[in-house]
Image (cartoon, rainbow, N blue to C red; front, side):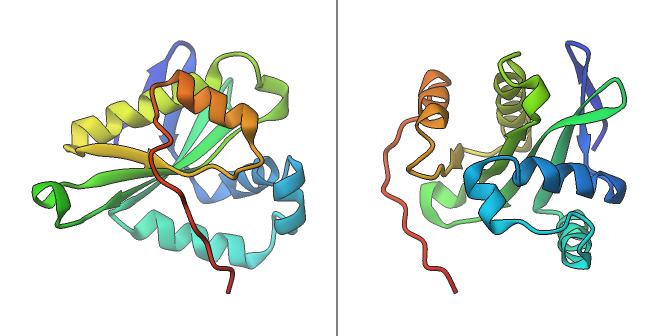
Length: 155
């Protein structure tokens, strides 16, 4: 995958040295703060290595002036439905607190959708915690439809 500049932003695959900045963004809200740990925990690097070597996963960062300011994970899912169409799952979308409200999230999602379309995906899907009402309005404004009820089981 090549790096792409979009309005002074660089969207690229994450590198191992980006992991602490990504984890810090994942932890920077009440939900994340309760579930994330030390950004230098070796389990984060092990997970990064697994994602980075999987051709169906892309951990993406948005970089501005050499600093990671956003992140998201794109996972490509095979399925038999829709004539065997691949779909793209967007996960863990975060923008650093200092850059919220600048339209970065909108640019990130648009980039992710374009990436999925270029790969031939028939659909882009995502989930959002029920408590994230601002995120729901954001995704609604981008044309996403809350068409399904999601379920999770913690193990």
